[in-house]
View 1 (cartoon, rainbow, N blue to C red):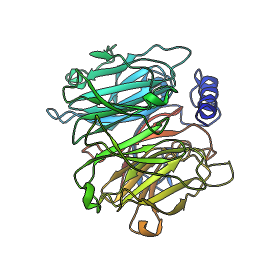
View 2 (tube, rainbow, N blue to C red):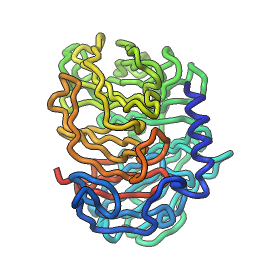
View 3 (cartoon, one colour):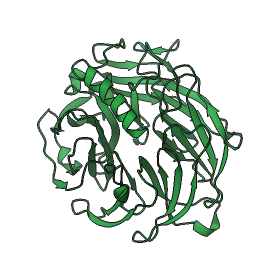
View 4 (cartoon, rainbow, N blue to C red):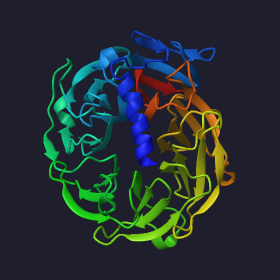
Length: 400
């Protein structure tokens, strides 16, 4: 299944790499300060989300966008968008979205073509990995952006040697970085790095008893399960299962449980509710072009025996992708459906309520690998970064 999805993604991205957004109509020029009125902001369908700024691909150095992250400078208060792309890591000053400034990129050359680039930020450093195209673990000190207001070339501060990897997850409570999808060797499904000294990663352990790990969510657990309260727990999304580990001892991880469901096609990623009682997971392969996408709700009150509460059907066949929780809202990158925002008051019945959206691909909700790969809702301003794979960068503000 993983090889099939990789080949599909490769075909789509290579066919469009010279013409971002090919096949889907989109605005061709930058747009600023558009309220969501009458279900539209600057030509984009919306609900309870204002458009602060839209920058098309040519305005941010070209290429196609994959992962999106953000950084707020603790000294200056400035806010930045960090964009993993098919040309490298891009930097955009979005402090004043109406005056967004593209500051250049760390160019990453790869063969045959750079497709996936995923990011995490810790202690004012961004960590970068690439899939299919080995680029090592690249580390960039974000404080170098201070005082910069024009485009310029950049180079990483450090390249830590690892094979290509598909995703990374960083536990902000502990400073451990989890590197997933390292090739096809089950013995290297996931490695753990101590990055408390960001430029000097130290390998401290692995998980290797459950095959390929596509993505992970590793956090200190403060949910109802008293046996593991305060423990570092990893939820690994391993294509056909969700596998839960106690990672407190990095040298000897303990597998707590391994669960799946009848409809599993490509178990992809997930997010925890604020109280850590529920896990919401995505499946990147269950859309058929007719059937809607589905999110899966798990009761994790007992980490050794998670219970599938039920599926939550979405409103379109668009492919569900990465999820993030901020307070009482879940922010969802839903590919051609763009940003979707839900409340989860009735999550015990596997029900989510969509309260806001911003559709980065106005002309399509098809099950295509295009549109919002990722969104970033954690900037202090309350602005949310939405990356369109072929559409560019939108800075939006939910009015919830």
